[in-house]
Image 1 (tube, rainbow, N blue to C red):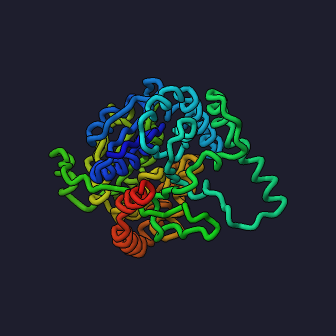
Image 2: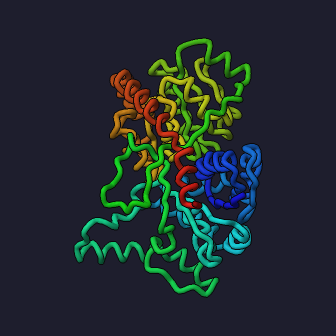
Image 3: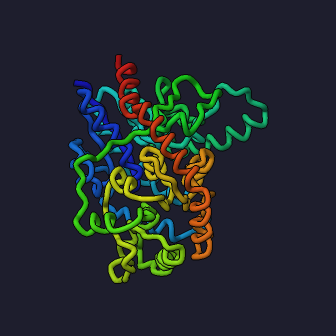
Length: 400
């Protein structure tokens, strides 16, 4: 039995793709260890995956809320998030190194966690990249200007990994590309959403999205009754962007009032601190942790933060959306959805108001039929790709 390990840091959206991949690997006879924040133990083990706690036992919801609340600029928010993740990666290197021992290969997540440690131990790696913008155009002819600017950026990106390399007496690298797998980089995105860049090396493969159906989920009676009692509701699912360090009543008010004025029934996911003492109208209901594989099928459209997971879920389950990106990578995923006409124009978090939400809902209603048709068509195509099975097939080839 071949043994592998995967390490990832961040919110549930940073862990979920690797749960899907781990389950498919286990089904195909691999022994998988998934390492992350201690708070994700229950989530990972409930999926039947061996869990390895990595790093400090932090409250990820509180940390994410604090980072988001500190700055409103998407680029600065992204930078703060990356610094937070890089700090944990650097501080956890000894734990990662120990967890890598005895493995046949390491699957290096989108944060490159585990890449240096695997390299020191001489263990082969497979990479996963969620953002296509992070993949180098190695086959594109480079001008002198490209080389200079590219070299400067690459040097900055490599800094955190060079700090880890220093721990093991390794020479610094000029680019993070040098610690990536030279044989396989899995991109869990559909070719029907993003076209393959002709300047990518052959090792970069669009597999299709990774997901499963959560067929065993049964909603509680209250939620089931609400869904059955009227028109399909709007689903508000801001993911980690609805984590709260403190009550955010003003923000929730914007959405509730906008739903009232546009006549929308709504299911609200998140805002756990605010919702405790918040009186929702009868046309709206709050729900906690409900799988998107079930929830998104119940709605008319989704308002979401456009993290990788929710963006993929809207496409997999064929539902149009209003993207509300908060950080830079979310803006990129929002543009992907808008480009294939399954979503409205992005509504940036800094521009949120009752008026702007109403304007986007109106845009959704005006173009709904076409967006819904496109979402369902792409959903059908995505299902023909078998993304996670394709990823495992490529890993099997890699191991052979």
